[in-house]
Image 1 (tube, helix red, strand yellow):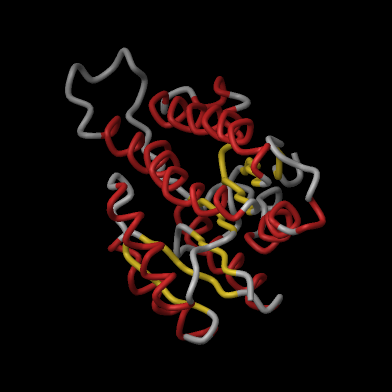
Image 2 (image 1 turned 45 degrees about the vertical axis):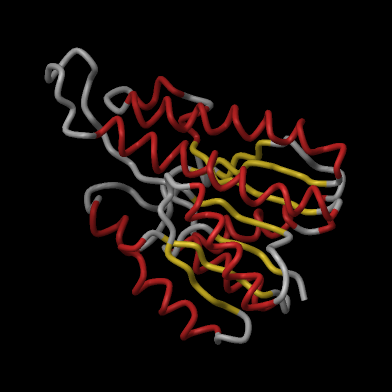
Length: 238
């Protein structure tokens, strides 16, 4: 039974977990501590036979290593596939406003939007390379392609752009070893939290998590065996 790691426990992670559980895969949810309840809810809904959850520190390679070891202890092998959902938006405001203290915005967006991808790839890829097969889909942001649209949140845009470059580089590094790495770029997700937080926005163009999950499902599957280093936009109704 294939094992896929999903690095979040929010609405998109739940949609991804649901898709792969329906395919008969086992899903390891690697989540930050604040999302423990969400992760436990996913396991409760889909069953401990096909899902399990492990809390991780996104900035710690040792923590990521402990996570995949927990999966091997649970199911006998490391994840052969992964979906990296590493996102934490912070505005920070225009760079010319606010002085030297950014309230920790830079550090937070770099850790959650770039370093988490870097650290997790360093841990997830070696077993896949050793096995000669594997696939990873990394969820990124439209802003990495259109940074001008992110004026007022420069650190976040820069972190997402760095992550996109990292994915392209990683894909080239492991392609000869039978491992594929691709990106899905998204805009706003249509979730209850998004609607509640942005009540005056027109949510009709937003993308539902289930729709993004289907694209991820394709990229991770053998149907995309010849696709690596790709960046697929899932922008909804622009």
